[in-house]
Length: 346
Image (cartoon, helix red, strand yellow):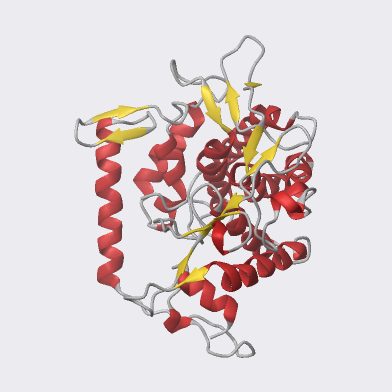
């Protein structure tokens, strides 16, 4: 099996059965339809949506045991906006209509009481990503399912939200501050964070780049480029890049240098590597360097981080690290998968 395909399989994104054994042979996946499984997934989605809609909508999250809700993502209906692409794919037309009607009413300028703190990262992947992907679907394979005025409103809401979040990038280095405060008299402001994690810095690229491509306004993509450059070209590699292609976790907002050598494929770091390959797949001409960084990270991962339990040698685990060298490895594992998608929350 080709080494990069092996890593994808080990990280759980594909089945080894669908990856070719030769690096020169076409690696075309083989799809087998299972209608009973599809029906089961659609039923689970509908059950989840019905519970959310009855007890939590238009708030963010359902608390199923108490049949209540909480606004843990700004109070704009995160579960609804995040689910629209899934509802479209599953042909849940009534759910799509409910979500579209909700999107029209959201006031992104203010959060609900008690939810003034806004995460650039979480808001991008759930709200901005949900809006942009909905627009792509409704102007692409699902064109005509929703009236054109509503589709334009979805895009307008995405632009408005991105404009509000843009304050995060007003830093000396261009590395964004993840923590924002809404509801102030002068609009959103940044909190006093001095560092930002590579996930939070890197995990906004695709959504913001896509918004620029849709609107023809390059400012959204350009905002992400400056901070991203510090991750692709590490200024202090003695700290920030303990292994070739594998970097630390936290970046100083002031100058873009790395604050530590801690990293791995765990929560808080995995999305940096995830978005390297996603951006390359999105546009291989513009983002060819991302593929090279991905390959460097994979090579180092195979060489330095893999281990096999003595009782189960057929299993492969990836260690975390806090610097270079075997004495810096931390043999832990988590439930995080690498090539996950945020648009299929249910």
